Length: 317
Image (cartoon, rainbow, N blue to C red):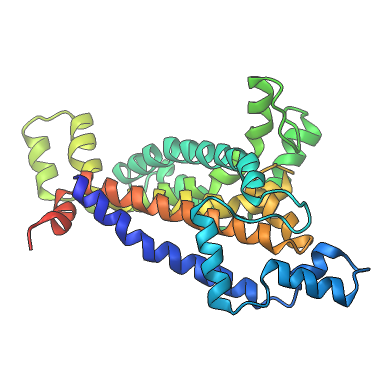
């Protein structure tokens, strides 16, 4: 198993380098001059030219990219053009807040989506099944902005149950109350996707002959569902969970903006507004790295669920 994990990690290296290259290249095409952003509107041409030389902006693109990757490997993402503080430190301060939303929303999505999908598959075309699919369709189609706004109006403005914005760390209770609305907002889409995928995967399994055979042998329905149905339907479910978790990291950008949540998504938006490309680049790189890490974890889970997948990478050549 260790060899399989090592191979998957090595395969991620060119992917991550490719993502960093694309992001860095796109940023380099921007008409915004970093020296002008740092020095302000009143800067002279001489001071701008000196700053460009200091930042290495006159170097060829391959040199600038190589220097950035070299600094990145040492944990140095540069200094924010507007804030004049370390980009790595700025991201370190807000990233845990984004992970709170991502993990919280995925826990809710898995806890609701998988059981609901199983129940819908085993009771196909029932009232509960039809209602679950309608709700899933609504969850997939409703924009996060309008959903977040609706939750704020209902639970914050009218009922005064939860705060409409910010993150209060005074106590565990206030933290949970602050996180509730953004977590529910983020959980809506993955819950709908996991429900639909679980139902679809289970429907492919529920009609198999070995399910009827297990029932004929008197095996308990709970054991059939857990060991025979769900286990064989797990790969597509794991896939959608992994994709949705990765999407949460980028989808949190809008949610964090709506709820004024101090996360990496809001930091990205604020940096874009202030033309702080160094911070934007750092945020995008971190999100990309985390997405790649999620994909690695999904691949490892594949090998545990289906040994045939692991065998393709571990067999002797």
